[in-house]
Image (spheres, rainbow, N blue to C red):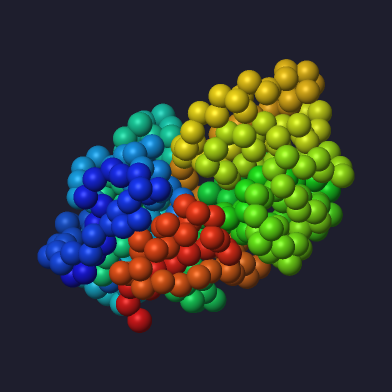
Length: 343
């Protein structure tokens, strides 16, 4: 099978072709696994963190990709949940122990043995992949393959982030950064919280224009002051500076949720600008979001199908994965990016 593999950690600003196109044997599913013939795989900012070593894979070479849509090609002998030919999705959560206190409480995203697709196991930048059947999801027919892929991570983590803000209808929501996840959150808010206004922060005019096109109330640069205070905010940027600016616009008692697995830099200059009275006092909160659970993905797919919530996306061929990743690094984004593996 054809696959794009990451042979080592590298700096994308220096190496514009971090992935190599190779031929590999088709993997054989174990007893509780399914073999999936991959149709598409979404491209996520977390792949940049893997490539550049902020959340490095367990081994090399590794096949990246954790927003996988495909068809069941073969099943292990203990699999009863799916049939050959079923369309399924695979997300970031690839495995959790199911025994620890976090898993028993439904917080398997916090499991100490958590394994991630495309980081701890081979992912979807390939013609075939395997996954334990319990960690795959039926895909609603309302979505095409390219529409469904970003829902598995960008959508699911956006759904979890929005829930963690404790938003109620009428709260002003700030979206700090406007990539794949944030544009889906904007669409969710417009549907579920019609009285809430969405304020979008982005460094590029193209992203700000896109946000207004999708119904944002206001859009500006990270350093801009919003015309109204924000009760809730979600940060999806890869750096620290925008968080400081976001806290400045947060209302008393407001909450800012950081939706990022890692930050690219420790921006000491930005952090030194934090003024306790201005940025944090009066019971402002900062909360991080970590990974997703299977329940997050399943709930979000159901919600997205009801709306229906369809992402904007750009499509690339498998061999164009490096181009898609470099464009993501350079913030050349309109919605999500998806690799087309098979027709």
